[in-house]
Image (cartoon, rainbow, N blue to C red; front, side):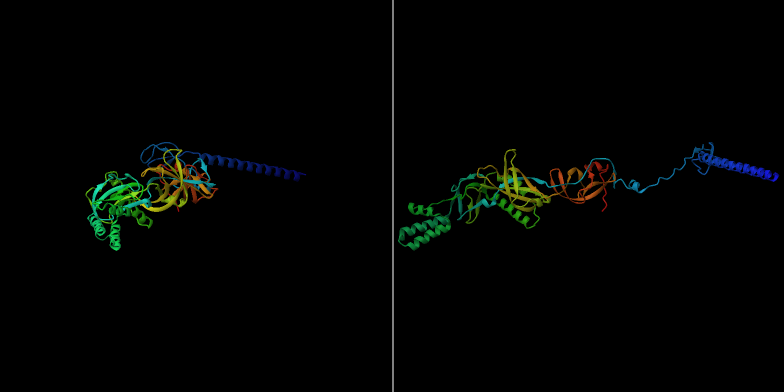
Length: 439
């Protein structure tokens, strides 16, 4: 019984010792935690000139005597995850913003091209009037360029010694041997070859007196052009032909401007001037059919073809005319490539005047494709840029564009219908208007 009591007391004493040990360990653990925390939160002071000096209380530097400053603790480094990688990229490669976006629109549209043009002569209706015999101009009935003339109207009279001699030869044959049909017919044929009409020969035989001057008549209705103006028109045609063959010739419009004073001045042909057989003196242009020629940028010529319809506007909203493209030719104007689009117009009612400015609208329906607003495309000269949105980040991307229609631009390559881009690309530009696009 006594032994059991001794064992029980020994066990109780050991249990008390174990509990006391556990309590001590807990107290030490708690004290260590608070001690570390207090040490961690303990402020340190250092010298701005001697950072190796560190004190736990404010004071002065033992080296230089400067007042110690509170040492700032280094914060934990921010871990950059994959979602934040874009923050480390240059500002000219992306933009972080919340602005209006738009997706490429798939549609079929009608492209309208507006072009300015002028009314000019149809060169096929320009008739040259040449002297059929040599002589001196005795009388000139028309005085100014572009003076209206009717078919059969007398333009001038020429004195020709050769014609006078040929007339006298015919009259002599008729007086001396009028029954010799061979001689008579030969004398008449000589006059015909010199340029006399059959009516003039008949009048000569009837009157029995030779004429000292012979008239030159207009073969068509139209307007009279002097030789210098006709030569200028032929120069224009030759330049057009060189342009058609790929020759890089400058447009002759500057020459036309320089010659405008001559064009509206008096004729260079004067009474008393001598002309030779075959020499072109005048040209008569008929304006019943005229040309309207439009200068179209080379980038838009792929949309215009021969036979396409064009609407001509002459300044009045209700005054319009539908016509069709007759001819397209390349040419160079002010050292830039253009295309000249020609339209043939009827002008029997003199609705249009030569030199008149007109506006033309070409309409062309396109096949279904993707289109972008003009504001969404940034033109950098050699490149076209849009800002595509990826996870709230806008990145510049190069695209290839096609034709333009009003406020829309056709997208050829670079985006899909599911892409989202900035509606206004100009708002994405930085202050220096500088954007780099990686290939």
